[in-house]
Amino acid sequence: MPDLGAVLEELKSVMAPVAAKLDVKQDDDNGLYVDTRFVQQNKKPMYFGGVMLKKSFVSYHLMPVYVRPELLAGISPELKKRMQGKSCFNFSEIDESLFKELAALTKKGYQSYKEQGFV
Image (cartoon, rainbow, N blue to C red; front, side, top):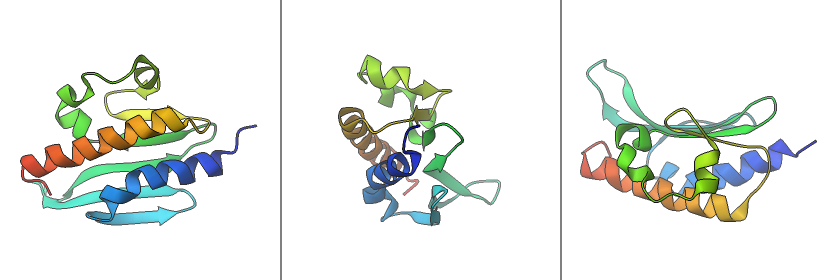
């Protein structure tokens, strides 16, 4: 049985550098939920991303890649295999190289949101 708690903590640390600049709504044993301070037309803040503990894996949501799919150009086939949907990556174990790649993608996502005026 994989140690999902350790995977959760590692993925939270991947998101942490940008989360520190944004609006953290949740940071506990179940996950991390991060909004921007940009208020959309529906009067809700724009979601940036999050890390969520599920039953058999930990999901890493990164909304900037949904808004700008071109950010995914050049990601490794290994990271691509972890994708579920358009902006979610699932992990059941720690993978240093993929987490490093995810950290770079998260940083690019933050830059993209910044360029669009969302942060």
